[in-house]
Amino acid sequence: MGSPAAVEALAALAQEHRLALFRLLVQAGDDGLAAGAIAEKLGVPNSSLSFHLAHLTRAGLIRQRRDGRSRVYTADYPAMNALVAYLLENCCAGADCGQAADCPPPQAQRKSA
Image 1 (spheres, helix red, strand yellow):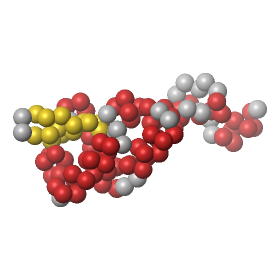
Image 2: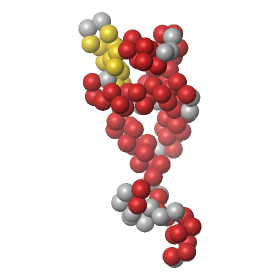
Image 3: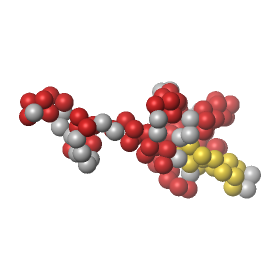
Image 4: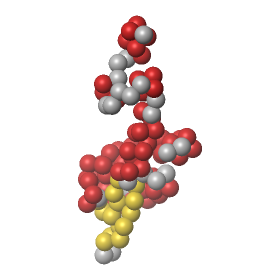
């Protein structure tokens, strides 16, 4: 993922309803959720929900598919993982630390160097 795509994805998530929506779809897994179920769970009007779904779709963070008469939305896990990988790309001052949780804080890195 490049910087322009990361900025677009982060901008899409930088809104309370869209962030809640994306987190809900991540929790829903590969089965996803129909638009009506999303609206009910989040308490967002359908008109607002359509706007937020379109914004996240344009940013490449969610996908939609038809299931009969319903549209079902799912998180795009490869896109989510690419965004997280981009954000953590240079963790640990560029050293191969494996897991981000294993990275020492920047001050600890300087002291041990």
